[in-house]
Image (tube, rainbow, N blue to C red; front, side, top):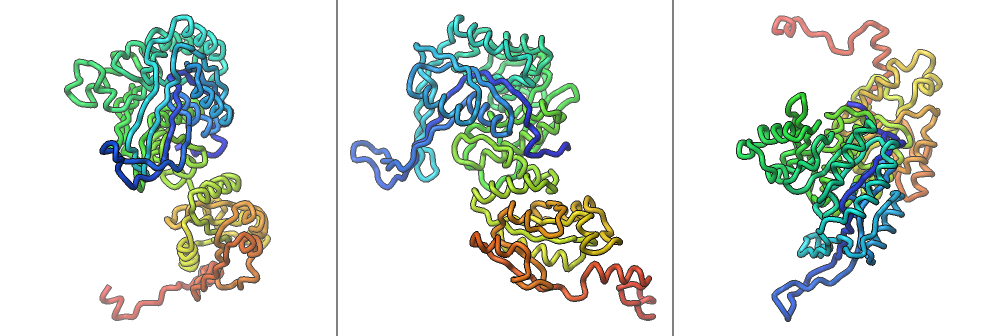
Amino acid sequence: MKNISLDTFKGIRILVAGDVMLDRYVRGEVSRISPEAPVPVLSVTERTDVPGGAANVAANLRGLGCSVALWGITGSDGQAGILGSLLEELRVENFLVCDRNRTTTSKTRLVADSQQIVRYDEESNEPVSSELEDRLFLSLESRISGADAVVLSDYGKGLFAKGLARRVIDAVHRSGGQVFIDPKGDKWERYRGADCVTPNERELFHVPGEYREKGLSLHGGNLRNSFAFRKLLVTRGAKGMCLFDDEGEYSLPAPRVRDVYDVSGAGDTVVSVLAAAVAAGFSWRDAMVLANTAAGVVITKSGTSPVSIEELVSAAKNGRGSKICSRDEAAALGKLWRIRGEKIVFTNGCFDLLHPGHVLLLREAAGEGDRLIVGLNSDESVKKLKGPDRPVLCQEDRAAVLSALDCVDLVVVFPEETPLALIESLQPDVLVKGGDYTPDSVVGRESVEGRGGRVVIVPLLQGKSTTSILRTVHSGKTSVPEKTAEEKNNS
């Protein structure tokens, strides 16, 4: 699979059109029942507003680092102003059209102790007027040629009730681009010919078809062919996701997560990451893996919340991706982990010919916190430290071996003779070194302790070192004791 980095989606431009909305959260505590009616009384402690619907798709794409422009319809009300401000903060270029006869769609959720107790919606579902549709389409059409992909986010609020989806699909295909659609309802003729449609399983089975009663494989494949979709990606919640295309059917299990906190907006994340990954040159199956990984990130967060590139890189590297990353990537991931309250541990070395002493050091280091980052001396710095005959293994091989250890979260190669610059960039909470050091001699101690961190010295495993291994190899002797005559006869 193509590796993902913090810069993977920079320069990718995606246009989003759809039903924008404002997701509102009123959080608090419940300690009593109302005397007026048998309902809980919420003592409010926090109110938050976030972009929802198509606006959440745009927020996800911005979080990945894409350049994004958004089209949709709002009312002339306070919610529209709040949504516009949120999009401006995200640096999403927006072309929202105001319809004075509509209400800006908003969903307000009342949450007590992490449990949603009620939701109320304010919305207008009537089809938009032909005049407003024309204004929106002409504005969007003029920018299609400069886009890498277009996403249509249909929440059934009236924007696609007429011919807008068909007009956009045709315009994008005339320019040689690709259209991704998150659908709604059972009238899929409007999406005919789209490059990819991403319903959830429940939505898929709302759509009529001759194989609807015969299961996912037959119904999904039949609908894809019936509407001439290039791809059909069905999200299945705890059962993962399934892709239908010319190569057949391809399924992925759901990502493993500790706790499912909130599934709000997971579909927005899937279509966003899928579109961005394909636009960035990932194969469809690799893009599907990334979308699946991203969904696993957002369902562990409270409320409608987009995925960030740091979160996606972290999840990919600690899942099926490489743990080997650049200094900037490690610093960004470290910042993310600190925000989550995770303790970061750092150790460093040449790790040339990994041996039990190294493994002991790394496992002890990992036990000092939640995340272990290993700084690895580059080949040139090893030569300066150990002599012209070292390292035995090149930095790529040494990094690959380290990254295969389950106790290691990230490996960062550094060219300097000391890791001081890397330590100051990563700002670890704990600095670990082997027993051949004293706390006062550890490079980076002042930097770590100055921020309230600590230094840990792990005792050496006697007789285990790269030097002793090389000495044994050069002498032609074996480090394994010779068997006795009796042992040879019994073997």
